[in-house]
Image (spheres, helix red, strand yellow):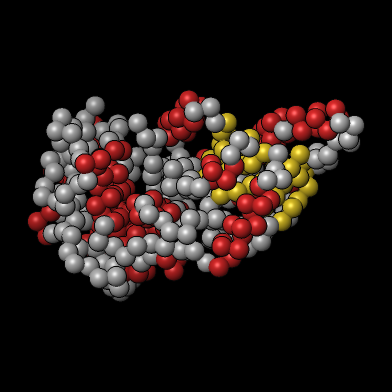
Length: 361
């Protein structure tokens, strides 16, 4: 299968773990010039000689797959000169402490992730918190990824023995399956209680995950009524709340939790793109510019889709230049407004079913 990218041009050196093998196929890459960027500076620094020349590098119609490993390496370089994305409001610190105590009482834990970025929305400490507790993984927003993406992730997690449910919290798809699975995994709870002469009790299931991945919407769909506040932005749920689902299942809705410090800035940018982290933590122009660079590389989108939608030629342009042209064309030169438009279009699915991650090899 043809690779997406042209030969590497001069770029910052990689750590040994990230070096590409010499046998890798040539690839297209927008290369960053790593300058002395102070913490307050957030603009992307691009070499004028190293901007993308997509139309002369490959014929998009002939591409069926993308080298996700190479894209991740480029994303690592694109994020290096940017101000670090960090977001840890006070309610998260308080909730994390309370949640760890409540998790000890759970019969089963339901971890919700964004189906577009399952790895980026995986809390690095979650497994240590859960220990041997039973867990169900929910990949929400399944309507925003392709069947190929879904199959790839289903296979990946099945090989690890992890039970996965794909859902759409807005429309309710997958919610009934989730309820049945939670009850079946915790059936041993009441078996043990009966053996001790105790009356059965409802199964306790805790729903956890990053901000704005759809936890509250999922619960509301399960209950078929609005019991938990939900909105398309991170940080709406700010306290733990128990709700009853029928006679035999209790659900704990929790605020989104993030690590105190996000060390993987490539993952942080994906969180920003998918609106799974607070807007104050990042510069929208930087994030939108990187999103453009990613969309150009994805076969299901590509430069032609962007050109048709915004009527801007992508020949010999980078994401930052694209934003500047869009700003001049639609927003009187306001780059922030142009960035919001790009991000909003992606979040609303205007580019089709697009995932930003595939399972690691």
